[in-house]
Image (cartoon, rainbow, N blue to C red; front, side):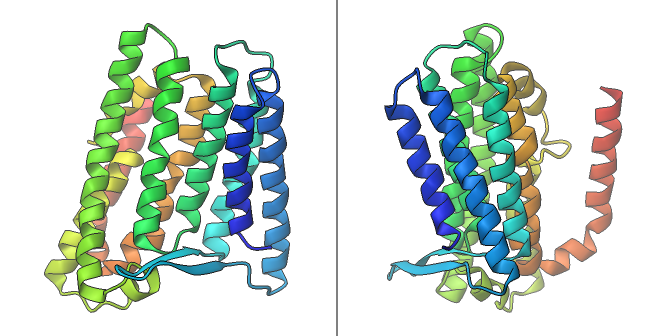
Length: 284
């Protein structure tokens, strides 16, 4: 068994949760999410025994796109966080009453699939696809099952979607530029690129915009309060518990190895923004 099996469980679980109907949707979601957690534990044990639990397969030859899912300490820890929290989030909704439960639980499962794919992908383009896929479920979860009136919910989630999608476009442009330099989206090939200081700066900035919005970091945080207020409890747990961690993970996995020099030169700026965020959050 490799890590791709966990993604299959989550994706199949999303489909099964929807098609079993409203009556059994919550139970199906809990069953498949728990199965994904159990599979994660099994994969972790195999990894600790020195087994190869990664999955690498050529998806598209031209342009070169690898359907690869990496298993290392960093990605597996984030996968464990995802598969451990999702069953808890689903269980926390038991006893609540809301419309279209099969759609609600299927979206949670699909979001877990997208976030897990983000943490495991080794190909920049595949990573970007999973990154964007994670936006779709939380958009509808907050819009359809959120708090307050429909117009206020729509305003909050549209703002969130535009912010995060616009930031991600800069990251996509960076990946396309890196592909032109290396002929590959594979992370190891991108790490080996000999980029000039100017190239590193612009690549770093492109990634920074995507991740600073997702974290969110001051001054890119203005979407957060509205979405947290309007999203249902399960949606807020998904956002704060897992989704925002995607950006922190991505900084370590993609941004720093590809463009390390700007990180060193402007570290004081990011530390300052982080401290400002802590102070701002404590005041609120």
